[in-house]
Structures are given as C-alpha cells and as structure tokens.
Amino acid sequence: MATDRIDNDLFLLVLQHPQEKTEKLATVPLLEANLADMRKAVGLSWPNLARALGRESDPKSWGVLYLGSAKPGDGPVTAVDAKGVALKDQSVLDDLEGIIALDGTWSQAKALWWRNPWLLKCRRLVLNPPFASHYGKLRREPRRESLSTLESAGFALATLEGRPEILERLLAAFDALLKDNPPPKIDRRRRR
Image (cartoon, rainbow, N blue to C red; front, top):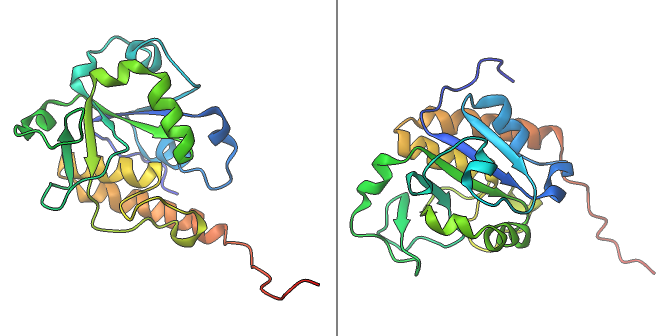
C-alpha cells in the first residue's frame, strides 16, 4: 500500500457502526490509509454534525450518501429530495464541503440514518455506479448499485472532484485486500 495519501478536495466523514470496526473485510482502514482529508466517527448517534466531525460546519454544505437508488437517466451522483426525486438544480453538488458515508451492514447503516436526525439537514446523494461491487459473492447486496463504503465514497469523490484516479487507487487497495482474504471454500457434499 502506498504511503502517500490522496489529497482529496472534498472531506470524507465516515459514521461507522461500532460492530463494523471488527469486520475482517472492513474497508474504512483502507480509506484512512489512502485519503488525506477524512475522519471516522465510531458510534450509534451524535447530536449534530459538529460533534461527529469534530469541528463546526453547516450541514447544508454536506452530502450524505443516501440509501436510495438512482433512476435511469440520473447522473452518476445525483442530489435528491426527501422523496428520492432528483433535484432539478444539481448545482448543489458544486458547493459541497464534504460527504458523509454510513459504514456497516445495511441494517446497521439504516440504524445510523434513523438515530441521527441531523442527517436530514444534509444533501441526500444517490449513486448510479457503472460497476458492481468488487465484493462479488462475498457479501450479498440488496441492489446492483449497492457498494461497499470504500467503493461508494471513492466513486462519489472521484465523480464530484472529476478525478478518476481516486477511485482507481481505492479499488486497487480494495482488490488487494480481497486477494489476501479469499472466501472460504464451501463443502457442497451432502452431510449425513
């Protein structure tokens, strides 16, 4: 793994469910090793963005990677309203200070969403990636566009900053992690 970190323009805040930090194939350590401007906050809830971030900031200048899905025709990263409909004015993406990713299983990510009502003040961002998760069959995803925390954060940063090398580097680190931790072989013989 490279020692020089990516100087990302958009700050990344990862809200990590406490149970996720012990996962063998967790991707947040790779984000920490590769991104210069990021912070991980472990817990279930924070009273506001400032407490999770460790400094004052306006939630309206932040985008949260929302658990909804993009519709055909939407862009690769789309700002949506509370009903999941793409905003007519996507220029809100140009003024973001940072993005927030929820890290955990799908049920844990939903718990983080509902336990932190201040996230409703942030811009909701949905992703429409042109690739499937590199986890492949290691983890079941509810939808084709569902990605790991690393993949979704990397895709969002690369797209919003216009720097595809961010995603390329993060995916290379992720692929190395997966290669070093192959899935266990399944004994398909019938047990008696």
